Image 1: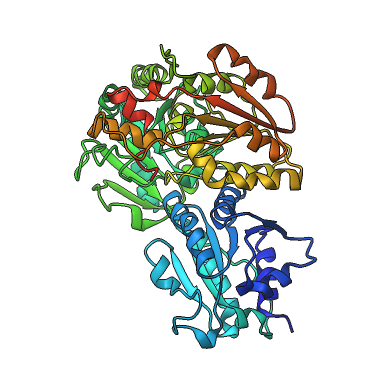
Image 2: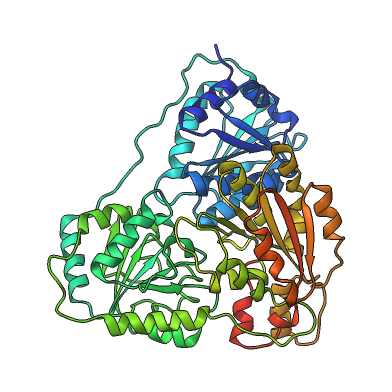
Length: 553
């Protein structure tokens, strides 16, 4: 008979999960043993549980399958909590397996014991603790189903060490059908009529289209119905930014001029996005609670529809299913939307135009992003950490599928480097570029040790301004001239990168930016430190606020 741990591993493999990320711990030794000698699942050993969790999230984004992270009890689980929160905010399926104290010691305040239902109950979709080995199969089955159904998210499973080692008479859990909801035909007919009649329709596309076939379905729909499209927060890779129907993204603080145009829409069709505070510009677009335009909200999770904004059409469905049922328009439109499309596109292009800065304290990071964007390989994967350096990536970098953007919707610092490593592991044939600040790198940069170990190819572009700059922007806005806690010292990143086996280079002035075009096409490990201007992001006003990331803390 297999051990419970062996059954868990076999069940993960049966679900197509071929990689997991971990920091080893004595509380799940049986699970580590179950991974020994298995060629069908890759065990990636990380240097910190936050790094393991972030890697699992990035891998899930790239595969469409749940990312899996394994950590030990107490401190290990606490370190991994940031990944659980990020998975919940980002709507990414995650399975966090935690080694737990022996079943007989539960709720005795044992060494490193935590009640994980209390700890994670507010951010995980489901938390389970298995005290009976016979419950392992149904727990794994439910965990995988919950993580993937409706709005994807994190599942936490605590596994007592003696339960993992116990032998059970059971078969591995195989995939079951995911729960799917389909639109009612009457709703499809209504939406077809609204789309045909609308003079100024607008699509807001979100994370539910970040699936296999989602981007293609969105493009086909937008083109056939002639509907301009904006994307939700940090989802720029859903739609070619150069397309005439691409109207921009809903960022942290969109310009008033753009929002004035968007509010002229007479039909807002939300496809697979949550109407969160950022996506709605602080609950102002559309207006609460009765939108100024017709609102049709399509999302596979009915719980996120109609929670803040009154919808005229509420459809609990995968947006791809709805798009298939809608089909193309019955006939050519009698009205002309060209003027509406052109207004939106002109504003998007204005916003995306690179700016020029007169600064002497370093290189404006926007200049770095502009060059990388112009020379970005067509199949590149770009990972972005949280911070002011990331704002121009979202604003001016012209993403187009199959290029991918992996950025933390939650604004979690430390995401960039682990995500890049996971991407390089998953797609060694594709260029991977990581944008990270000095603050974020000092949180999880130690995961670069995996690059030499796994012989990866990766480019890291680090913004060095010796500041938690996104917080500094807000500090200067609310408490001008009273700087405290936002400046810090940094090590010699050239030496750090070299120690990890990277070719380290440094950019000190704008006339050295040509280095970027030199290294982008090259394979191997490259690390570029850019001495970045802080003044370029500190001036007050709407542009400065857009540079910030208020969700970074």
